[in-house]
Length: 184
Image (cartoon, rainbow, N blue to C red):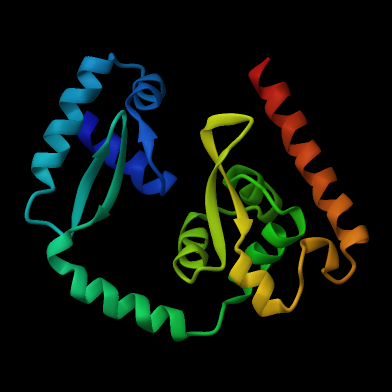
């Protein structure tokens, strides 16, 4: 499989911007090879429904601006649908933790949550912020609009917050322990 296909697969799987440095590291190739492959991938994606977006040192897959009307129509339909069970589960984790990474959410749920996170973000229920501990990562938090809609001033007012929050914290600690033991 060629380098461009691998980069495309990584970007699709991640569902968020990835730096050239991280791609080079993951693929065990030089930054120059990665940059060349990104240029080739961008060329291959011309006149397709997906485009490669580049911002500083990060790249991401996005939809072609030429089909924005279709995407807007689909987004409006999606916003009018009820939340799925998996969306509610993900939203609950974000609410009760009030600042959690995608990898932590994935660990707790046991599945990839990138598409659900994108849908919740589009609906304005969650926001994606740079992690203050590591500016290479993102954390997800509930929006003020969501809290207002729920009629609460802070996440501490959520039902059973004092019981559920520590359970989520324990899961995150387990996740961190697993990551530490894997990196040793």
